[in-house]
Length: 133
Image 1 (cartoon, rainbow, N blue to C red):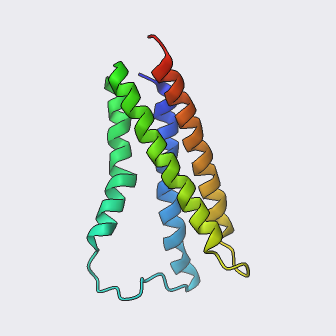
Image 2 (image 1 turned 135 degrees about the horizontal axis):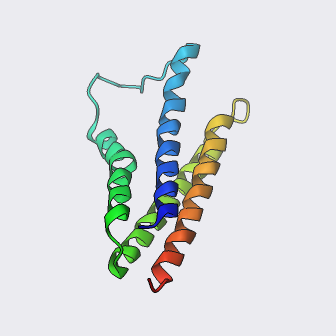
């Protein structure tokens, strides 16, 4: 069991949940958060995103509790890299698509933190993968 990786995955999961929460919290300030063309049914793409960013990390955390083999360590490192690239791309998109007059500073700050946590997770995964025990 790698406690640091478990904690980092939990922090990533919290960050991803907060990211969505920040969007939804705009409702309290009268901002319309309904997507254009929404028909009341959740699209399959939303289910896919929720599965990838909310459900799978829970399974990764469970796996970290019970698996320790070299192959699993390599898979854990590879999965972490995919998440880091995704977080980096999302941060870049948020920065480049935000109008300069009204930047989403809270989102950008959160996404920077999530990316840093993800990079730390990659570093810890790499150390774990390379270790002998």
